[in-house]
Image 1: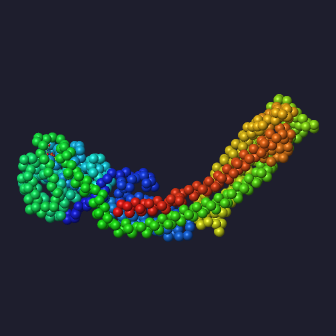
Image 2 (image 1 turned 90 degrees about the vertical axis):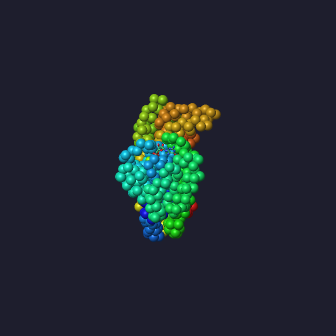
Image 3 (image 1 turned 30 degrees about the vertical axis):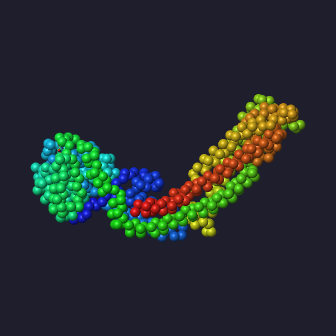
Length: 568
Ligand SMILES: Nc1nc2c(ncn2[C@@H]2O[C@H](COP(=O)(O)OP(=O)(O)O)[C@@H](O)[C@H]2O)c(=O)[nH]1
Ligand SMILES: [Mg+2]
């Protein structure tokens, strides 16, 4: 953007520093005071564009169309217009050789960004200095082609200061460039001195500015205090004569021979004036005038969109309820199957018969008269031979857990696609990929379960030892010795799985401790089947965890709109 001849200077949007949130969803992380209207419109556009409608529910086509319309309106109309209005105002510092232009620019910035001095550099690119955050807004400015650009944090946002070549430079190319840059300026800061303000050239140039309607401010530099009243009156008179009576006049007193920056107090009135030009209040007026209508028209659009987003979130919540109900039914069935002895069926029962047959390692553990038979050596041998039973239990439990998971998936999917099911259910069914880790999870759970065997049996034996009945205590010790930890654990696991013979044997061996161990291991397994079924619910839940289905997805859009309104 640049002010064309004859146009009023374009005011910058905002002068306060701000940071741009990395995550566009982090709307509240940026203080409102640091948000510009352009930021707010860009944020809104980004959020609107990102709004997905994952669930095919009634009205979805209209919602998508309204989103696309809003993205177009924001992106093709409002953002470009606001960007244009937000570009920093280019303030060209102009005047004759040695007037103190470069020194003034340096003093306003607070460091030497442009070379000053009595020696006239013959070739030098003019320097443009601006705030780093204005870099992008300035990037398309035509003036950038012929200047050196310096970004400096000390610059007020919304203003770019340009130290132009001397209007009366001995070099023609410099003179030309000085005039060209004035054309591109939004505002002229004209520097002259007590000694030179009478020169003809500057007034001729200024006359041109008046004719074109460009805005001008005067800096009267290096004024000896004694002559200030005279010079000032004189200059004001000339300004009036030249049709410039409304222009601000700044006086910088002479400090005697001087090198380097001027004291801050000498330039602070100019600095304040620049800050005011860049300030958000002025900017709001300009932008408000131009865009208030278009911004107000956004409201019903955003409201409509927010309602459609809310409908998605509501549908997702309803789907969640239906899934929870379906899952509860499926989990109940899974528990029933464990309690019904599903893990004991088939291979496990066959293995049990084999192990407990007359020649098997668990055969004849108890004598016909009910006595436990076997030495510690037998115990070690038996412990070593129950491995296949435990493996069978692992495989069977794995299969049972997987079946429970598979059944849960079926039940959940059926609930989703049921013709009388929730709106949007089929979208969730389609987006839900069958879990690939079902087998891994089931096998881990099954191994985790059998790994509990030894600990649970020991704990059951240790709990409330029956010290009074020393005969029973003696028999338990004998059973531990004769079967070993692993042997007893395998029997307890088989009992927990539902092998009736295993439970009976366990009670004979270690009486109530056996009941306790079998029950605890069965409870453990029931817990694991519940967890397995819950994995399926979690997998479908991940589909519903889409941010577009979140409870606050709609309020985020409404909040964006509120921020916009607050800035107008
Ligand atoms: N005494 C005095 N010298 C100044 C002042 N401003 C600039 N100068 C000196 O005047 C010379 C020319 O200044 P410069 O900023 O390069 O002027 P430019 O040609 O307009 O850019 C330099 O030696 C400055 O140090 C001032 O306010 N008072
Ligand atoms: Mg200079």
